[in-house]
Length: 312
Image 1 (cartoon, rainbow, N blue to C red):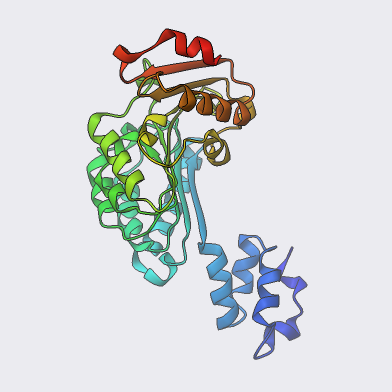
Image 2 (image 1 turned 90 degrees about the horizontal axis):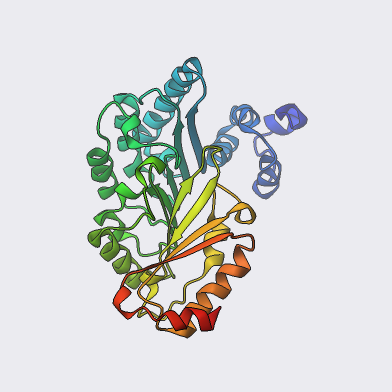
């Protein structure tokens, strides 16, 4: 659709479209069309900007030339968000991903850290592709990113981040429903696990959240699609919120549930037959093509071999 479709008489009219009708038109506009519509008048500019800024996806990938060009555009966008709070407050979904061998510059990191606290209306946060290691920055970004996240006042419902960014800033997220973590596949020799502090943080978030929290790891194969999921039903132990594989399937953004072949479950033990049965039933309904299933037992001394045999 082109902005030329909207009659010039309407665009020049002091009142223009009724706001409800204008929104029905703008939802079909691409970024270039929205930019053109924003030039009409103040009302159109605000509505067009609101749609442009509500969901921001910044991707740095491709050849060296492409990466340099996208870095310039990315820094420009991030500094706009950092320096114009009214625009930053329009953002409800933010994604920053980087795939490439060229280290990201200090300007990318500093502008990213400056913009995050300004996005006060943010609901969905995605930082880095699962294939990306934070070592691809020219400097260690974890300290700066954790400081920036600690200053944020947004209330998130879904977070997709490297496991190294699971820290105390999550304790302020009382409406969190999805926590997807990823690590560099080359660093995973076995099933990735949360350390004691991270596991404690996840449990505290679950207990304080207004909604059930689903926590899981993803590992990405060379074809850039998720090939393994590690989930943590153990975090739901001793709560009234049953674990559900459907929430993972619905929120999986790096792959399709039907193509997933490997699943690992971190559980306390296998002694509660009803719980294990419910977990397996939920898993079978949401991921029908699993070829490999592994249980990671947190308390192996209570492992009852006969239990799993009976359930299966």
